[in-house]
Picture: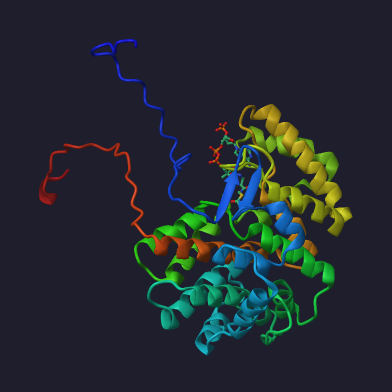
Length: 383
Ligand code: ACO
């Protein structure tokens, strides 16, 4: 044993980079994000298996109840969703009265809040989780119809979550490949460990607030471009780059001036995001022409990030190909982030229920860096 030197200088504290990086803020059995191996697991199942084979409803059942459903359980969940595919009149009225130029993400946050103002209170329940998850797509589709000067449509009970959403947006029975594409997207985005919006939802739930307050807060957190607000910005970036021959110069210039390449980098993944791998293949098949540019820009961006930001381990994240996939299934750019919320509602509610069933108030501390002994001067004497 080396004796401890008396009065030795304390070990230099690691500078606090902020952002709660590396901090374990909760225990959860819902999903695991393994940032080193590039693995995402929902309750034991690898995301690749779920994305390639399951419906969104199967995955929602898995997240909420802890196991993949039998056919009987799946049919029962479908029936419950169908029964909740309705919006109170005052919520419809709220959506109708918002200016047609309102961002759909803001419409969703506002309409969810309006719904919660009247009909939701008490300790969060699975019934409320079902109702919220069923209603997110209805709100967006209603607004999308109203802003086109059309009336909202009735849901079709025979359609699953993805197909019904597409039907409500367009009024047409969606193509099979569009349903499949959107379904896979919804499966891939349904949960993701302690991401910013899920953490937000859990913090609100930990105060014993209601489920809608948690969801409204989560929607606010998701909206930012460092989280779920990136996909339409990926599209803007590709649009600005315009063609493969301009890609290298554009990317170099952006990184040199401290810009963030949208769809790259992640707080946890220090390798490719497994969801991006699935989405890349789907985007390649869905629109080979568009993929020529997005695939090329991805390769150039990865090479230049490696060269110009060495050691930062910046890889493609889920948002990069989300834009391409959602565009291919017919969604407009301003519906990309709210459609992320349509999917993540399942994860948020699973986490809210997990939080309230074993609750302790989430209340971290801050490292205070301000003065501690300022001399008080009354207002009349201040100069
Ligand atoms: N483009 C260029 N440089 C980047 C990028 C990027 N996309 N991401 C990180 N960096 C650089 C930073 O400039 C920083 O460089 P420095 O050491 O020279 O200062 C270094 O990498 C570390 O960056 P941090 O900000 O500490 O990384 P953090 O973990 O906080 O950021 C984040 C993660 C926010 C996702 C970031 O990578 C980013 O802004 N990406 C672009 C936006 C985006 O794609 N958002 C969607 C995220 S996925 C999701 O939430 C669903």
